[in-house]
Every structure is written in C-alpha cells, then in structure tokens.
Image 1 (cartoon, rainbow, N blue to C red):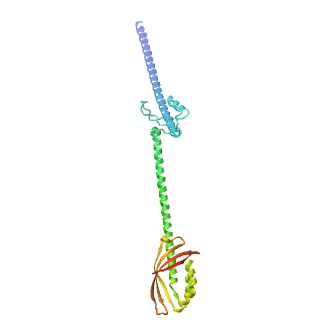
Image 2 (cartoon, rainbow, N blue to C red; image 1 turned 180 degrees about the vertical axis):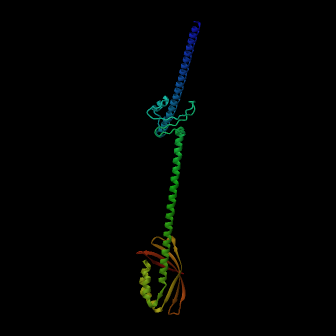
Length: 294
C-alpha cells in the first residue's frame, strides 16, 4: 500500500514537472515570436523610413528643378508629400537590403523611379545649378566668338589676297600696254612707213590718236624722205599706282632707240623718257596721252 502510494506520488510529480517544462517552453517560444515580430516591425519601419527619405529627396529635387526653371514657389502638394514622409505606393521603389540602424545618418538607398537617380547631384542647390549652367553658357559663347573671329580672319585674308592679286595683275597689264605702245611708237622703217604709222594709230586712243591722225600723212613723208630706220627698246617701266584705276593709269617709261637715216646717222642710240597715259578702249589698253620728258 505504501509502495503504491509512493509510486502514485512519483507519477504525479513527474506529470507536474512535465507540465511545468511545457509551460516554460511555450512561454519561451511566445517570447521569441514576439521578439521576432518586434524585430520585423522595426526592420519594416526602417525600410519605410528609407523609402520615405528617398521619396522626399526625389520630391525635393523635382521642386528644385521646377524652381530653377520657373523661379516660382514650390507647390503645396510637394510640401505636403515631403512632410508626411510616406512613399507613394503607386510608384515602384526598390530599397537596398542594407539599411543602417541610425535613422538620422545618411541612408544607403538606391531608388529606381522611372528615370530618377538619387545621388550626390540631388543635393545640388538651384544656385549651384544656375552657376554651372552660366559657366557652360559662357564657355559656349567664348567658343562661338573664337570661331567667328577665326572665320572673319580667314575671310579678311582671302579678300586681302584677292585684292593684292588683282592689284598686281592690273599693274602688269598697264606696264605691258605701255611697253608695247612705246616700242611701236619708236620703231619705224621708211620702206613701210605707212604700216608703221598705222600700227601707232591702232595702239592709240583719245587725244593722242586724234593728234597723230592729223599729222600722219606728213609724218610718213618725212620718214620716207629721210630714209629713217628706227628700232626702239624699253629699259624700264614704272606704273604710278596712285593714278591707277580699273581703266587707266599713268606709266613712266625709259626707252632707247637706234636710228639710221639719210643724214648720216647709223644706228645712233637715242634715249627717251616718256610719261604715257594708258586707257582702256573697247577691252584693249591703248595710249591716250604721250609726253616726252627732257
């Protein structure tokens, strides 16, 4: 009887111990579950705070862009969304897995919201952005000025070269016409005096031609009677560029003529200095005035 009672008492204690251990284990499990739920809630709160901060940075950047573009106040809707600190569930937001415990510190968050990229440039102030844009505009303006100056310089050089080329061509043209006219004027042969005088007339215009035409017949008779043979050459020609235009110029000519005649001259050299005015006549340069200088 005593042994049975002891056995029953031992079984009762065993049941009580088992019940106590089960209750303790259940309590521990509940505590662990509550702790896990608290940690999960804290992690969710940190993630929500990170999303809210990212959204706030995004909205602040949009507000700054609007202010820089329009120089107007930020709308009340943006302020309200920033103050609430709640993300817009309609726009997908991806938060990085690593979120630091200190909510007041910089949060390492990467936000993918359309074309929005939250980075260090998001902290740029409107004044800094305007300064950067101003510098870019100044650099572009300077580049344009340099290009225009280079183009203007090139055009100026082209025009100067063209004018210099035209000037040289005109000088050479007037010099050649004066040389040819003087050679024709100082080259005669009594055997074909009429043809020689006609060549002089063909190379003349204006008053000189008129005067030469008046004395042409008498001049031919003198050449034939004196049996003149004359061959002229030109030693130097100088165009007076101060008098030169597109159609006329005064030319200084130094000439030598070897004369043979019935009076006894036999290839005697005679030197002449002439001031010849060359004028364009019908597209051809001719002598319009001839002066012999002593």
